[in-house]
Image 1 (cartoon, rainbow, N blue to C red):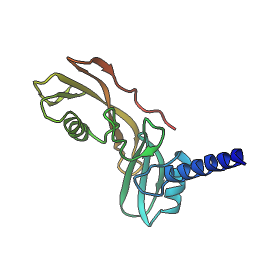
Image 2: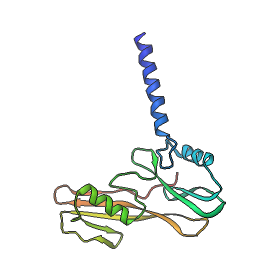
Image 3: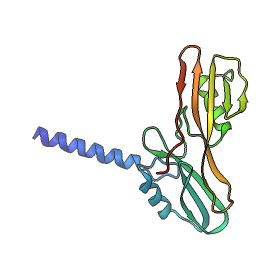
Image 4: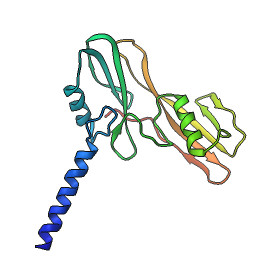
Length: 170
């Protein structure tokens, strides 16, 4: 009897976790690529739409008005979100990366660079190097979709720590 109860509890908890991980919110989290595709198939309006996953075109449709654009990323926990809320990113742009670093570190004395551009010339003990990753071109504008990842960071206390490689096409 106890074994049956334990199995039932484990099954129920797995079912509840899976449902929460595939929450039907525009920002996620989504449990996988197919959950994201299903969300946009069910929530497609009459507006032109472009949906990207890891910088690569996942879903697009022709419609009225300017195209609605949304980017998602597979985060380090495996779930898909529009904002991973992590130091290594991904971020939509350098400004988002800089704001996140300053929020986490707690001041604006860190040196922050994106590719070869200095975003913040700090005098503190932290150095953050971000890189731009490139995805697919937009079917509407032709502009390439890009995002920003942490390449590496270093500090006087923790040494140098590597970041991430650009995200793969899923």
